[in-house]
Image 1 (cartoon, helix red, strand yellow):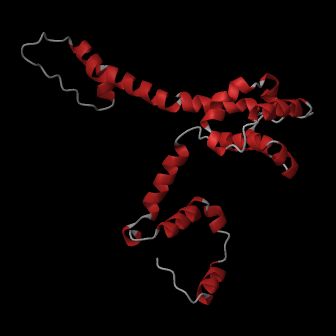
Image 2 (image 1 turned 30 degrees about the vertical axis):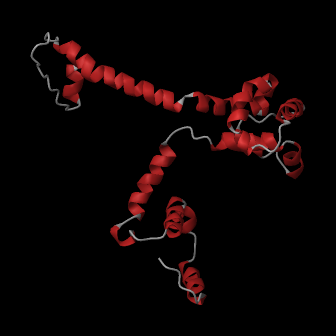
Image 3 (image 1 turned 120 degrees about the vertical axis):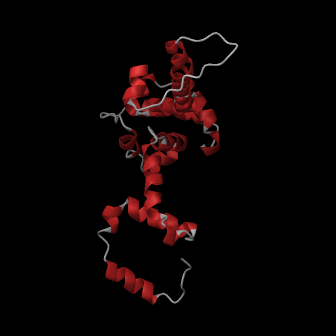
Length: 204
């Protein structure tokens, strides 16, 4: 532990208190640094892989490639968790018919994106709850990278000159910065012409 602290250039204060048996240096490091570090890791794991996250991950059973082992019991927690997004209470029957439909497919998609491409207007009407649950599964983040990149992006947008921007303009600038490959393809002259044609001036 002492070598690790030296490599990371961390200053370790060994405070000696009176009226208390002096701890060995290794035991002191373990109590003050190592145990706290392990505790923080466990808290992060609970946060990222808690009951809510496990319920969301169980929706992978809806993918056609996993549908042979699909049962309502496997996704029941997720159904209760996202019940406010579902249309009716016939989800259990819908799961069974979805399982039969998946078994009839020659090519069984194994990703959420591929599975969602199966849904046309007819299939969306037949399996509205399955469609909703698959969309929820598709939006479950696998890491915090996207959020961290978004905050990093805002640091570049929210400069001192733009501190009083309205939320809508801030959001639009963030979208342009995020999808810069699309913004670069736009014709700046056309944008200026459209802006000049407008009589109402929006507050920036």
